[in-house]
Image (tube, rainbow, N blue to C red; front, side, top):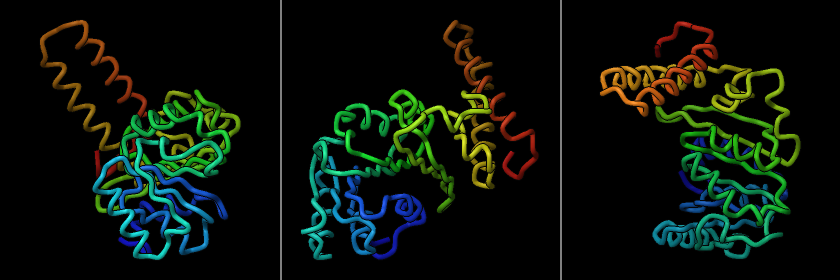
Length: 243
């Protein structure tokens, strides 16, 4: 992967970035994404944000090597600390846990006044992002699920709007867990992900069954059991190679 050829995961993120936008890529690592988007004429300006010194220096080096220092600003800071209100109109955050992404958005939400689109790729716990979007009046407008190198990733795209719109006509709890657009399509990566999750939850439930009885254990058993039931309903009890 480099500034000319992204991974499938980052290519999927890239295709949802608004044309002619000013972008902040939070947790940019090597700054591959903003560099690729500038070189392909998608964005007019990019900010590559990094909180860790090593990746920050790597991003600086790559941007300099590509001759893009006039179009990409590499900044060191935690989350949305690297931007000011009005700096950008599109934000990408990829390759982190869903809870961390939600926390980054929450801690910097005063910076989002001019942002038109969020493109978010959690490695896990996407439900935390979907809940944050609803709580903060962002409407989920698209989702994708992909598999690359035996790992499954979800990409969530949001703009300001009616946060409950994508969930109408379905059980909200189910939509939040698995994704309203992904639920409608039920692609192979989706079925694989949730079949594996169900298998893991069943293993956890069996371990809890063997644990010493306590109120905490019973509460956890109920929580896991409810998740299993939800996912079984989503999969329509389909037999698959992963169950």
